[in-house]
Length: 265
Image (cartoon, rainbow, N blue to C red; front, side, top):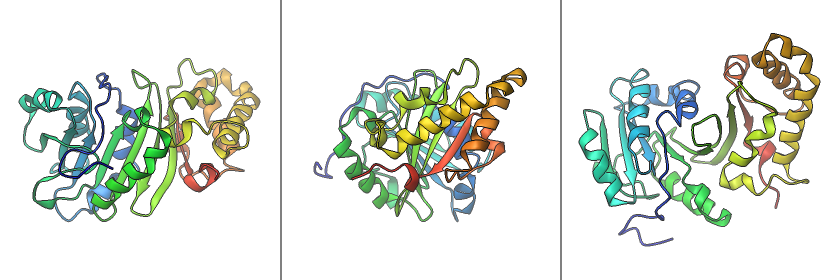
């Protein structure tokens, strides 16, 4: 890894759109909200590699203030021009600064959540672990790194949750309207998994089982795609260690234990 005297990482393409990361934000403000509430002081949440527009950091701050009014969101970018673009939007609880995977924060602050979306997708698979490890060193107690990828307008998303011990879960989140098969999320798997969606790998088996259950649940389509998805996930839960329940499934979201889908070898 490069010297910590300069930002760690490389400049990404920077493409983004308003509301693109809403699915992940909803998960952080939902099942993961306890991490923010447990923080003894104002929790710090980092939008790492937010891209050419600072809009996702602004939206994240808006959504998390519902959980903790005193939350501090810091947008961190390795490209100085992108940091400059965010500065005019700074406000109480929202700032922007130059940096990378070393997650530089004022006064040695440690983040409760680091959201890095569509960042590592542009790296090589063998670079992922080093980037995760660097962020893990910076996390607060009960802190979490969220490494994810989504399509251009956030209809399909997937992310790995990584705590101080390592990766703990994989979440996929899908827009129900127009969904043909759950495996449509495959092209949006995080870098740690996207090249592992091949026969013999657990994540491939997981997506295949989702598709088979989706096909068997076709009769539920009469009540809409949401009911079909609920039936699909209920069946898959019989053979896979899912970590959530119907309240999340209704949103087109499900989370599976990382150990069940982790790459082999």
